[in-house]
Length: 308
Image (cartoon, rainbow, N blue to C red; front, side):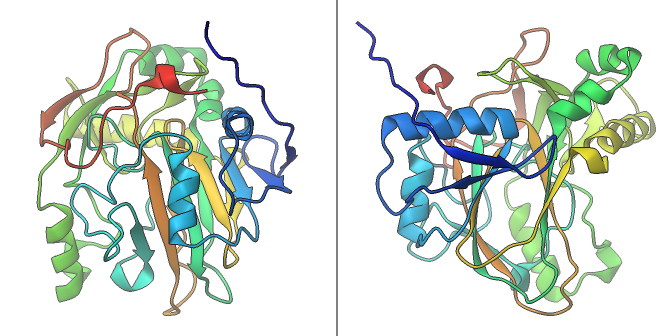
């Protein structure tokens, strides 16, 4: 007989109409009960991004929380982890600023299913994170564009166009870019990804998508910009102002995010922990495939049938 997990009632309060909710009253410093995990996952499916204030979590607690939803990835396929903490990626303004729309690590064949970010050092102004709902973006497309997108595939790579042009990069920035590209990755993903648990369709593009399979770079650029413009419409975007100790959980399969560089030269640091993901599937039922680069050291392939 299969065990049934009963969901625990949560105090969930919407932040915007289309994306984002705050979860109140949970003690994240304790091990989560299966019913609570199921309730959080259900809320995440509905709202795409969840905010937990004043969590009291340290690095170990953040990892424990994320691990409740599946096996963890290592910090990153190419970027070093926090010393002594192989699952934690420091998102540190002193190590570069990721002010470009993206979904985490889509250049590998099975990007993380979920991402957690925790506020460590927060500037007194600015430094917000934008998170966009790619499912409502897909639904916003005119029917003719949805039909077009349903049949397209895009190549994602870590050799991508940086927000800062090459000629403007200093020596330390060039070293970071070399590290980021130290293993070259290319993966073909469907432009429209079907969420494995909800069946929702979402635009799966973002900063690592470099070209459309079968089209020229110019044609690819025009189409990717068009689809991306729907993702980043203000109605689809949560703009979150951080406080120290807050944790944000978002569904990496159906969102994009952007760290706003609007805090001068002040320090800003978040710690990221991600949960291993499944291989994306398109509308036609076909799965993503790797073109270049082995990411098995970074992440196992998640079995979504085990998700609650």
